Length: 285
Image (cartoon, rainbow, N blue to C red):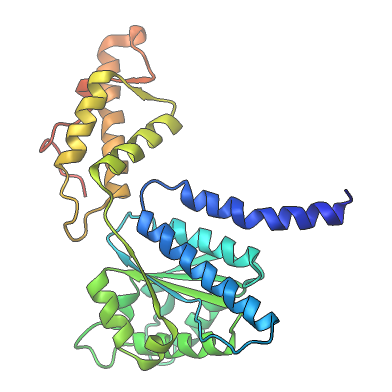
């Protein structure tokens, strides 16, 4: 097999490998199913086009809704890689932006600022987190309108070169999309990122712990499970993965305090029960 054949084989395998990366994420079953559905529809549209069939009115741009820490940025990166490997994008790289990266300080400043960010994202994914901040309610002259108008224009003029994913809380994102007819016509696929279950939160904590070279004693694992069950999942602004990261950092701090008192005889790799915060001990944002 020559290099060309190997390259073709690698290209054919890449989508499956990347979808495998998506499937390997903890939880997010509904998200995985929706991403696969979207990819399948795009593949179908391309096959119909090659066969000379009528064009399907599909838009690749996506709306991600949900609380912080639910994996939206990670999935956006994977979507970019998938779109690259199915031939929808040339690069598939991810450029992240928030209001401060796009909105200027005076009239006319937002347009060139937004175009600069879009240029960086060309042939890849522009991921706008907290996109609803571009259309704040009851502020008719907000400069975010300039960003939205520029975004819509660039999305139209750069079809096939620019994928835009906007993200934020569900209710606020509904208002954002409804704020401009151009947004409503270009963002038709909504993917909701539900809060992680206590079981998934525990799996995330276990993964962070393993990556750091640590492990739980049996009692520590039981304590960690009880802590995850006590978290207020489903509450707006619950931090999900970010909350787990804060818990992990607290476990490390408590382990450090314990090890100082025990000296060299202690096991550096082991989290003990006293290293795990009790429910209500600490507020985790």
